[in-house]
Amino acid sequence: MDKIQHKYVDARGLKLHMTEIGTGDQVVVFLHGFPEIWYSWRYQMIAVANEGYRAIAPDFRGYGLSEIPREPEKSTFLDLVHDLAAIFDSLGISKAYVIGKDFGASVVYQFAILHPQRVIGVVTCVNNCNSKIKAPLLFTPTPTSAYTPPQTMY
Image (cartoon, rainbow, N blue to C red; front, side, top):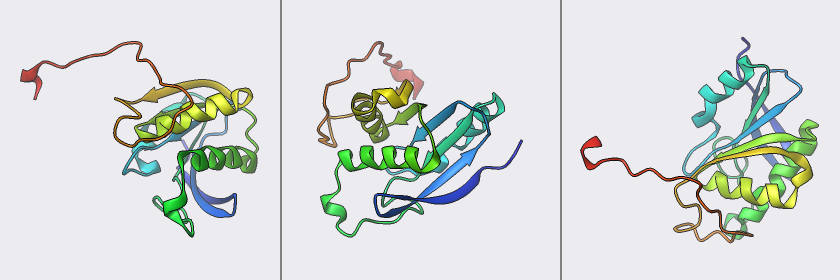
C-alpha cells in the first residue's frame, strides 16, 4: 500500500493542504472536526484505500498546514462548503462519498444540500452539530439512533 501523499491546492485564492491515498475510481472525502486536522482520519483513509477507493482529507482553511484567510473572523461555514466544491474541482472529482465529524459534519450536510449532484453518500459522526458552534444550517439533522453509555463505563 502506498503512503499518504501531501499536496496543496488553490481553493478560492487560499492554499489548502490536502492528503490523498489510493487510486480507485470512487472517492471518499473525510472532513475533520474541531480542533483537529486531516490526521484524525489517517487510519480510515488507509482502510478505504485498501478497499480500492481514493481517499482524500483536507485541512480546512486556517487549520493544520492550510493557509489562514486574511480576515479569518469573517469566514463562515458556507466558506468551507465553497472551499470543498473548489477542492472537488481542483482534484477533478465529479462525485464522492463525503464523511465529516464534529463541525465537519455541518459542512457535509450543507455541501450535500447545495451540491447533491456531487455527492454519492453522506456519513456524519456528530453529537449535536449546531448547539455550541451556532453554525447556521439549512436544516436541522435528526438523529436516527442514540446511545447513552452506562455511568460505570467511565
